[in-house]
Length: 315
Image (cartoon, rainbow, N blue to C red; front, side, top):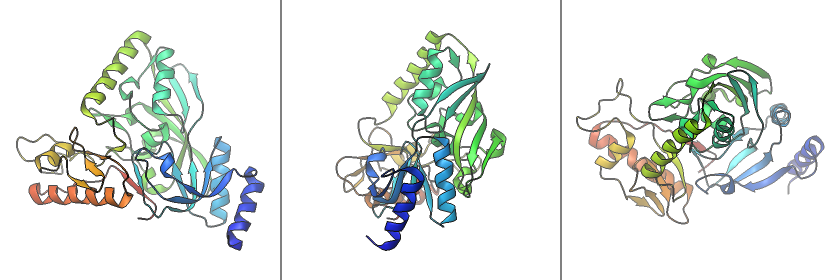
């Protein structure tokens, strides 16, 4: 272990305690795909304060920072991630006032939804079954059957690349389909507040179960995946061939790609916009299959599919 690593390890220990920030940690265990190389440094945070402190420390030392939540909707390269990976995966939920619920960014969406349903608070139940965390859901403005989670968002607490905290209204996040400003800004969400309404817990539970049933019927949940790989085309931008739904999965299906594979990376036969792991697979094989799907759809239909999945690290 070189002197820089030893020195940085001592600094991390002084700041967070012995062995809290670990060196050369495998990231596959923290992703829904179950693949990915090592992080140079890895911190599993316990509080907002730790996230801010870690960002400030890294900024002062010119150490790159990557945020990881539930590990869904991401593909980490086999060569890993340089710098510090900060995992934000747990936290608190509270009712701030009538009609406003706050959740830490590391809370899973499903935990938040269960918490709300138990208390007769409606607004997010249709996202039941959505993998990942509150922070991740806002980062990509999670969608389900034409609805965007940003529709229920009121405001968030953010930390900048330099470690500065601020609170902004939802409108400031530039939310649109599968997009927020966070994809480019490098900011991380610390907490989020959503609007909610009083409702019958039994009615909310019924609606949540409908969403879960739809996902089970239409998605390949039996195999590891990262969710949808591509954004759906936009009718205002893409020229969709007659008779084909405005769906990335439908285009992939019509291009004859269902069941295609590279190694053990497989285009799901259940849903064309899912690539699943059918065994031991390399991130580079998954990425190769993604590009094959993009190229074939472009050749056949003249539509370039845009990524919903986020690539992290080196391949």
